[in-house]
Image (cartoon, rainbow, N blue to C red):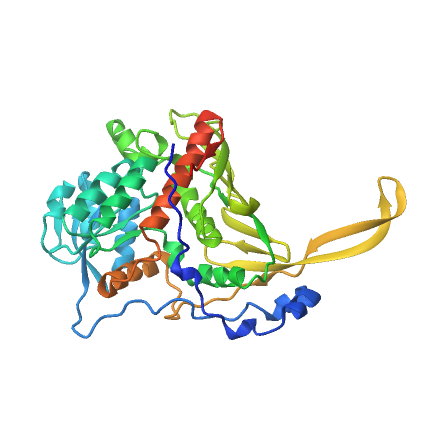
Length: 421
């Protein structure tokens, strides 16, 4: 059973209208594809400027806990951001720790145990990029140690941990807590949120999301004894599988755009192709039902990469297709003709189709269009220095984690799961 917490729409959805929307809705509806040709294609400044160095040139001193693939990826991004510098790294695996320190500041300290890093007075904030089952314990300890926290998604291994972590964060109002939903900081998604708020797609009732790959998702292991430590994503003891590691991003976007959380989830999954000893699924499909009949299908498979990452937003007046770093909009075109239907001649035939594909243009406030994670990290620093709540806050993390775990539970049990009120 899950306790219901009312989700407050993120303040990022309150977006300043752009001059590009100053045309009549009737004109848009009547001209359909023609309207889309000149609409929605101008960049708008919907995000505040990224944090820049203050006059005293202070920077955020961070420690990275977990310097595997994601941790070192974040470290390489931080190298290009003057707002942050890495002063400590932690990993139980020596080769991972060496790679992390190679990307850190000269003189950065290396630790094998996270408690040692948390005791380091030179560390202002921590970035936690550990296996999912460790998220709650380390994040809670970091808060208790007085550190600001950037925690990779999915926020917690279980729904109960999500609720507990929310209560822990409330105990430290002076500390910033941010979840690694980098697309909340990417201007493209703010542009799309603006389009939805302005109702240019009409009534949006359906979302179609996928995160597909064609690989076994396995990482090479030199020592067989390290198999479960390296490939932890493939074992339920440590991981929420595809739904937690990949689809969580898209579930977060749907939560954001709908301003709520799913009320019911059904799902199926299986280990049907990569039968190699894993016990997390190599394919899963879930349907999330939101208030007012809005539904989102979410899938992840490891045997075909067609369209890879994709979110399709289906409205009565148009469709948006989102890829990872670009998006397209299609007007919904309708016309009636006479033809033969089921053997009846001169019957009315409704021909449905999309208008011409148009790119959605956007520009980040700094004009650089960096990796979304860069903007998330700059946003983290900005939240700490301004004491403003992050866009990817604890409420977003909690709501997402519960939705992810409801989907996995639905697939494991074969029964619909409900967000209890």
